[in-house]
Length: 297
Image 1: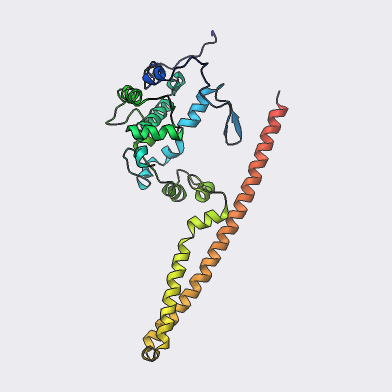
Image 2: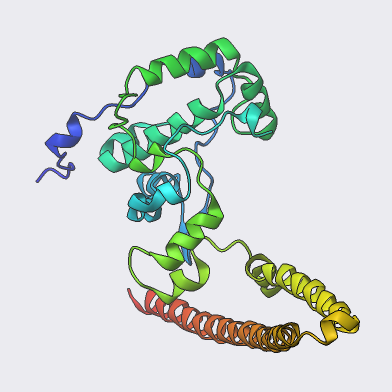
């Protein structure tokens, strides 16, 4: 062996989705030293990653969408298989991408999402203000860049992009529901946190999932008040059927309120112990991993 990496013949056929000499490179070139393409450090859970030293791992972490791919057959519940809306409605690549076919598809999907978002000059202006693209990019260069990219993918079948990008906009609330009710593999973490937890605070969790109770209690309050007014009238006081209905509804309302309070309490208790135990287990795992790293030569 001469120390060189053996290249998979299938990967040799992969080419970047855009030419190496593209309009954006020409328009944004300056006389200054080239800036680093990636951040100095990033994290994958408790592991540190230096992107400029391991670009492939960083690109895989940044571009691949394995969790969404696992529930691809259920994404129709979270969004439509259409292009995402452009930015005006919702007021780069390196040779490393060709070392992994799935990584290349994910990168193509990310570029395709940029093509969806920035379809008009006003979208490009919004993107510049938001820091999504360089302020040196002009509209003619961007349009030419997209043409060069779109010529290298199949827009009819989207076979060149990761299947996640066959859906444009996805609703986080529905993704959370999918991961809780029909996860790719059963896990208590999926049931509690869903796809991505929107907040780590209990008040936000209960406000998101139990605020409908306030509306129910408001309706019950109005209905019980109406029954009370009815019982105060002489006609309904002598109506046995109305008396029975009022009694049954009042009893059901009391039971539902007590039951709802009990459910909220037990949900809070379960979440408290789950987060307490999972945090403790996670902390021990991190300490054990670091101890092993120190003791290993």
